[in-house]
Image 1 (cartoon, one colour):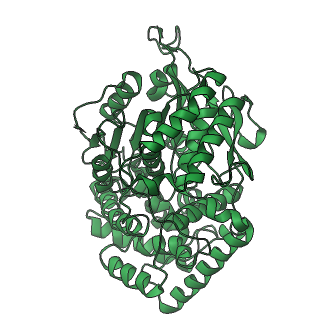
Image 2 (tube, helix red, strand yellow):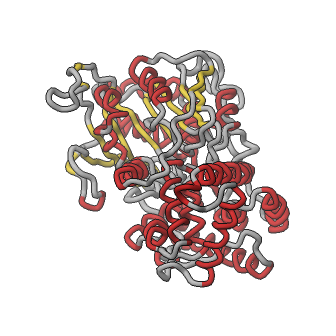
Image 3 (cartoon, helix red, strand yellow):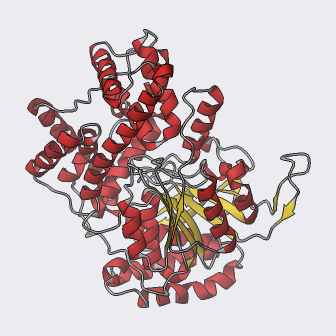
Length: 554
């Protein structure tokens, strides 16, 4: 993205964007938004191309080590008014190394590779930052890609230091212990309705008129401004989870600006799914993944002694829930914190050994592992509240939501009968959207026609709970020429750069050469987790979560 001289990019950028908009696919008028927003994107991109990004040592607030460097890019708050209020998005980068292997290092021969530009990454959310992601350049799975690409992370609008959004006091958001009833009473439902209304009002109070501008369409427009600021005619981008949704919006808005694009763990982009139906489907999928975890624990009963069947494991889990409801572990881990920790096992199977160990040790009278894993960290309270605020604002702004509580109650009560693990927790998280004070958009129709896009790569795990597999199939139908790689029998969320060599080979071949497999390729599942939780495994998991911290959908 940086190979083009700034002024050369400036001369062609406007015509590129305008030609993209004029060549929008049928139904693309909704996509481009108003003509003033389309023109505003051109103006902002031209301005960013001229200014570029000055990368320097990262501020201490980012807590990012060398060789990462940081800078900012300016975007309009409102693309219909590009000369009005502007906000700055923070950006991080590790420059392409130009070589793989290292003499006296990994023992491999040194290979010099040509630079292919910048690879921009988004881990999803909404509300997650990829500022730490360039650290992945040092990991073996990313070495060859990092040799050819500048690895670029950024904090989307509202996230981190990018004009941060907040909806309530961080201490109130992080209070613990909390309840998490599987089948809530009517009085508890009334309490959560009241809290949802207060939260929505808090977002409006702190953000003011800016609240309506936190949208997926604006995230896609911001991405094009970032592309221009990096000095690139075409974008190479990898999005995970929610990052696949606004990445797909980008591909539909700016198909002629796409060089290579990877969609890892795809959100279902069908407008009828955004976002209410997607969240219901997610809750159903988490029930299946929770069963996968319990089946694995039962297989290793000799290690954990939690039962030889998934049902026995569930009963022992309920014993732990009942105990921490009566007496919170460490004074902070109640049912809400226990559920949040176990939800992590639904996202990532590299958490399975740690979580099973925590349950097992707790029932033996040792609560320390559970306390260590499930206690909220005060130092993370501000970031977590910020992430949740952006998540809520984007999803509530993006689409209409039911405004009648009876609809939510009917749908989630029925769903909880077959999927009790995550249903109501997911409902409470999204309920502020029922009382949202900002205008709602109609979801855009993600779609490209034959020949509009270069080949794009979709990666999906068959049993992914956060972004259920049908979403990948739907995205492939909508993006002409896209190729799907499926990891069969696996459910880890976010599979790029993970333990599956087959997936990584497809990813690397695509990013380095542009080559894709046939329309649909399959990979066998990666190995099941080792039932013994080792410190080194925990450290790797922590690093992976820092590099791919997507929450909620991601």
